[in-house]
Amino acid sequence: MGLPLAIPKTIVELGSWSIFLCALLICHKKNIKFNFAWPLTIPLLAIYLTGLISTIVTDTTSPASLFLLFRSTFSLYPLFLGLINLEVKSDCLRRCCSTIIFLFFAQLPFIIYKFSTIGVNENIWIGTLHQNAGQISVLFPLFLISIISPWFLLYGRDFKHVIIFTTLIMILTFFAIAGEKRATIFLVPLWLYLCFSLLLLKEFLNNKQFFAAPKAQALLIFFILSLGVFYGSQKLIPSLNLDEKVGGEISILHVFKYTRQYLTRDYIDPLNNPIENIDQDKGIQLGRFAVIERSFSYISSQNIVHFLFGYGASAMNPSYLLGPDRSDVAYQNFGIRGAASNVVRVLFESGTVGVLLKFFWFTAVFIWLLNTFLNKSNKTLTFILFSAFTSHCVFFFDFLLYSDATWCFDILSPMYFLLLALAFRANFYMDDRIVLKNFLKTHLKIY
Image (cartoon, rainbow, N blue to C red; front, side):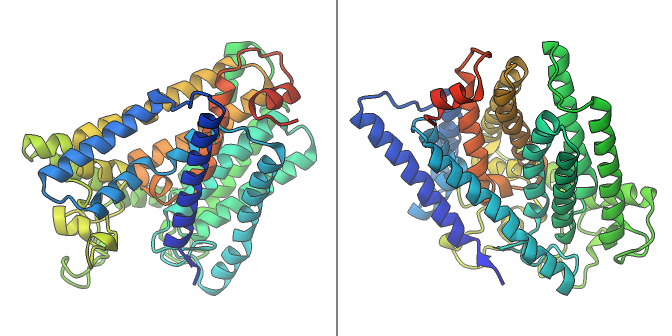
């Protein structure tokens, strides 16, 4: 049940390239220099080049492998390049925002139906998405929290704002819990406090009031929500409570013990509950941290070419375009099976050079957004940059430690690159005395 991921992914990618090509043609027609944002584009081109070298060296070159390498390297980055070069009209921006809001609320009936008929389960469809992995169940809420929290902290003056904010956080938490994402218990509170701490730091550096409501009130609301998330996650996710059932007895010690075991487990760990030989049972997996540790250990023991440039485009990609029965390709090629972050995929496709380049890209964007956010005093610019920075933190975290869902699935990427494009435009306007109307007119051509 649900729409297969390949269909919306293809549509979104075609739309991304269409916007990029339209921007390129319009700039050419108007004799305007196209802004390729080279400081951000060059590292991605270099990653593709390292993967290309590795693909040639390992003799796995094919049109499919080169296409898939290009796809996994650039994601929807062309959308970002298109948006920073296009004149975005107000009606277009409104339609985009309305579509995003609609897609958010469209998930709710599906999640409620899933929870009432199937219960808490990560291996069944997520909202309107048809997937066999549940990473999006927690990344989707985190991404929206990265936008909702800045809005509340900057504009939430009234009681109605408190009600709206707490309701949305509860809904997003339920979304993650229904997908059986144990990380919810830590990540949702962490992201709330990250947002609060960032605005507190900004106030300190700028010596200016940014919080819409008293800081103590916002902190109390975040504390109560964090307690609710912590309690609800333990009660509703069976593996996080002692009775291993919905509504079971909770224990903080059990949560931390289970989390440590889950993240660091090896193939013979009791959590895997093996019923067949490891070669046949795909449920026997390493923990997330164990996957990262073993991947770097494996690549460091290889020859210098593989260490630097990896094994090419076909190393980790499960796509049927590269051949049949590739659902367990990482185990077949490298003896590694488990939830792997994007850093693992880049490591095997483009080597340590690729990892360093991708890390440099994320770090450069991180520093750029943080620096711009902390140095702008206009509230409108602050909201845009605040949302862009915290959303980038979701992508950065996913790249390093969690999965490749944000970069490769094209579910959150459209909104991410839209925020990045808005932040990029805001970065070049240094007069902090402007009002919202002037900012939108100057940068988004909204009249």
